[in-house]
Amino acid sequence: MINIVKLLEELVAIPSMNPMGSDRTGPEYSEGAVADFLASFLSRNGIDCETYEVMPGRKNLVGFVDAGAKKTIMLEAHLDTVPADNMEIDPFNPALKDGRIYGRGSCDTKASLAVFFGTAANVSVRRRDMKYNIQLLATCDEEHGFSGARAAAERGLRADFAVAGEPTGLRIVRAHKGVMRWKIKATGKASHSAYPELGQNAIYAMAKAVNRIASYASRLRNGRKHELLGSPSLSVGIINGGHTVNIVPDKCTIEIDRRLIPGETKESVLEAVTSLLNGLPSLEVEEPYLIAPSVNVDPSSEIVVALSRAVEDTLGEVVVEGANYATDAGVFNEAGTPSVVFGPGDIKDAHTSTESVDLSQVESATNILERLLF
Ligand SMILES: [Zn+2]
Image (cartoon, rainbow, N blue to C red):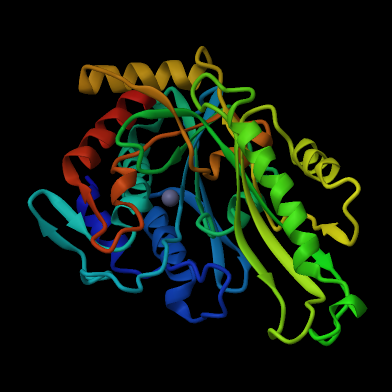
């Protein structure tokens, strides 16, 4: 039998930090080593698998346990973690204390990886008794851009339904918001600040745009709501403009973070913002540099019903809820695989300077998954 806690410790000990769009490189800032480790773990346990590069050094891992069943469940978790700057604990030397494992990624989301991949190894000798074939997937780059999940979907990876492992505290997240980020640029004309009438001030142009966007953001909060997720939201998070104080600025850029509820699309969102800016000159709305779709799995769908039963049988109660954060599940749903989010650990412990996971949740998640599969 595979010891899931030992597997979790081994996974935490292999750094797989996401460079988060920075120019940081090297083995610690890629998922290659942890993907290779898990691939040899699966092979040793008789599970067919392969890895492939999504970007240099950044790998996805796929594996398959053929139970001869009609339906296939995908169990997915991401390999990357956020960086370990400013951590108050040793990030890659996992410590066991008070029933918790401490280390970067212990909660988000190597606990789910250990449960999914360790359980697949444990049940593969009993595969003929399983209700579902298992499609295993471990992705790179969830924390910044979801490109691993996208690459998997583009390669045609599908299943009848899926569980994306994230620290949901063993609650079933059947809906979550999507996210879209993009820039708007204002272009003006530079001049000496003593002769501002000779220039066109890009900051003034952008100020008018920001005003309209701010009132639109408050209208959004009071508009259409989703039963679990509430209203969509918009925030202007960055503004950059000007070179020095004695030059009339010719450029100003803002960056927008927009949280989408189910039913909203990239096109509908961009169209709303573009029409908002009608009549304001010199503005350019760029294509989004990040899009993660929302999730809205029907409460009566097979994965919600079957997983709910497994959770209730194990814990005595089940919570099905919505979440505001985006996950790989959005990409799989968009590609046609109903995908819920579920896993051990508390989202409040993720990304923190003392990241840890409660091992009783790891154990419960393992029991829940076994019940789901048989
Ligand atoms: Zn995560």
